[in-house]
Amino acid sequence: MTAADAWWSPWRTPDGALILHVDLGADREREERAFELLDEVERARWNRFVVDGARRRFGLCRAALRVNLCERLGCSNEDLSFGYLEHGKPFAIVDGAPSDASFNVSHSGGHGLIGFASQDGLGVDLEVRDPLRDFDGIGGRVYGPRERRALSAAAGSEKAALFYRLWSLKEALIKALGTGFSLNPARFEVPLAVLEGERSAMFRFPHLPSDPFWLEDLGEARFAAASAWRLDETPDP
Image 1 (spheres, helix red, strand yellow):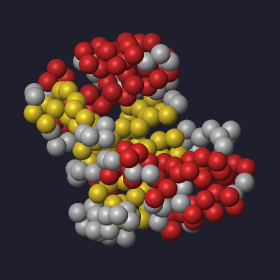
Image 2 (tube, rainbow, N blue to C red; image 1 turned 30 degrees about the vertical axis):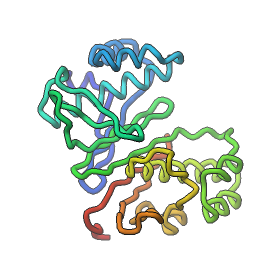
Image 3 (cartoon, helix red, strand yellow; image 1 turned 90 degrees about the horizontal axis):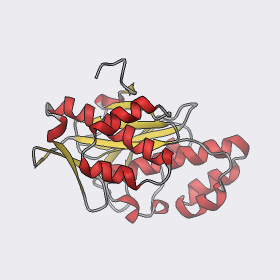
Image 4 (cartoon, rainbow, N blue to C red; image 1 turned 90 degrees about the vertical axis):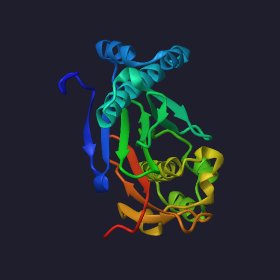
């Protein structure tokens, strides 16, 4: 597949990681090419989707992940499969053997992100903003006290922007940790500097104070987005 045929492209390179943007707009030719790249398990999953948009997002993102993982791992598409950890986070299997490749995927609406990193513990999240959500009601269940106060003080478009910014940051952290929503997101808050507008900061989960993560707000006009990854050491400011 040539670069001109691909529906993904490099988007950000935070601290040596690579994050691709995936175009998930409806395109029959792309969807047919993506389907051909899926294995039997993935095709069965694809067929179980009852909503066309969900089926399209899964197929296009998974096929893009396959192509790029194969390139990074030096394997054929036929030799690549996926396993899943206890809380659902996928890992790559090459020719029957688990790989230590670090990657993460997120999609919403017509956009997807695929992140790759050299170190384990990577999470990415993307959220297309919906201005009609019950921001305070949902926020009361998933945000901590300081975050709820900030959300209550915001209004209109600023409230929507803050809600999705916080959500993408917190979900990226949960995905980096690999626990899924077995960890209640209201149990932790984003760093104060990030809540007040900084784009990045070091973060530690309250129950894992010796396990630092680096958190980045990657949001832009089209969507809210964030990345998080486990640190071996504190990065330079």
